[in-house]
Length: 161
Image: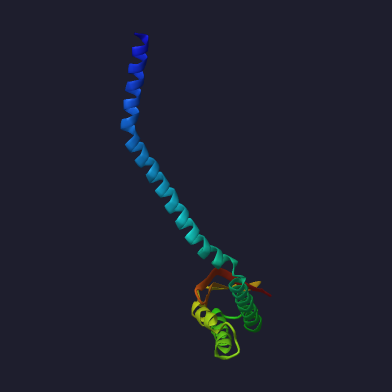
């Protein structure tokens, strides 16, 4: 009798596992499909991201343009800013000097300077007894084939007296 009881228990257990085989198989199949799709998407996007990050030519050109713009702005401030100058006169002089760079053909950052000229206003220029400052939003965009580089920074240029 004990043997029969054991057999009955095993047969009950086996019948339950047979019924559960279909949902478990479906669950395993769905998990495999999900993992496979995730790995495929990850690998296909991995190449795009590494291409943008590892192309140092874009970064070098952006940093070169940023340094050149910084040089030009500080040069303009050195020529225009003086102790006791009126704010409106300073703004006018800064825009006039920036236009000189825009009108020259040999200036590498003409497009960026055009945008910066529009930003020079009463709100962005500060005059004190000790310094003159100009706050500008610098944005540099480069397109090299299918690679696009965008750099954006808020800069404050200060000339001390």
